[in-house]
Length: 301
Image (cartoon, rainbow, N blue to C red; front, side, top):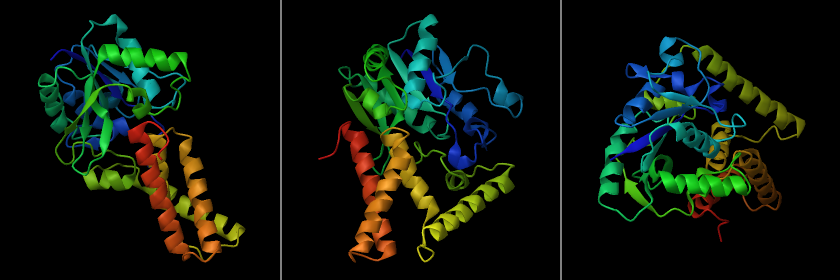
């Protein structure tokens, strides 16, 4: 299977305290090196993201691997895919483009299955990984290069790709869902994710400081609004914000949490449920709607 590869290695890593994901170490290499290994066999590879400080392994790409950056920076994964395709214009054209996020250390477990599915399904425009729990992961997928370029052009002529959802970019493609092994799509959004995967980082004290700052800020806000008795699960709120940012567009994160909080307050105010129950129900509904939105590409009914 002839293909080029676009590896997404940008993003603010806000919930990691700004620590660059590509430089995190796992099983003897960086997350970026694992992504490059998952893309082995590509005719050309481009890494979309900034140069990462922290040692020669992090700052230097293998010979022949291209570097690109989305415009504007931190414009999101859809814009990063477009930047990667543009950087590959001067490389030999291939019928397929493998798209990988650099923060999935076990992505290689699913890549061979993607190619096998493509080989047996000649009429599709691409394949997308689906985890055992049914979650689609567009950043572990292989897509028709011509179809991707077409959709990027359409989006660029329309509303643009800044802060746009990858699901929206791919919405018109005839894609095949491919079941991949457990762990293939596990990514690193938080330090809890990193710990679950066995990833360590030397700035653990700084991470704890950030978590303590968030907890302190949460208490300060609750006091300001005279809500001292309300318990807020900061990690759960951030998790829901992350789902909204990935499934819709990045600015949807604060908007989603605001509306969920408002709905929880209304439910508590009319005596519909307790504080905890109201908040949990609102966050769970927000998570569900965001996922449905990303899968349909339109407003859920």
